Length: 103
Image 1 (cartoon, rainbow, N blue to C red):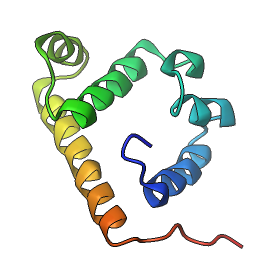
Image 2: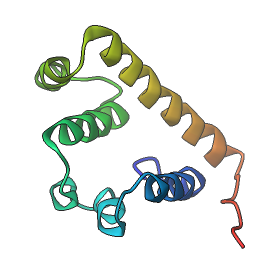
Image 3: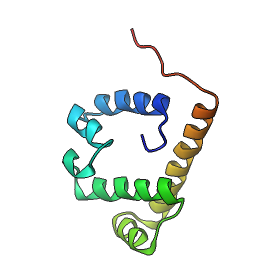
Image 4: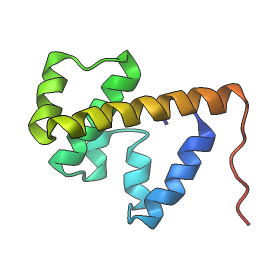
């Protein structure tokens, strides 16, 4: 959603629903995270994702928040995961890959 990659968003919308996310939670990702009834941990992860995608960095305050929530190895994995999906969105958008057609 943050990258405007329709393919990736629609794919993850389906995965999220299968994992138990409600339509309201999925929609909240595109508007106001406070509307999604996210747990404190989920709010930290979502906010950290927003910061990473937007600035390609975590400021000291956000670093402290995520480091208090995740062990060091998991923080590294989180940063790598966000970076991977940022790169994937660039690739899919640049190659003009269209969303899968579901029948």
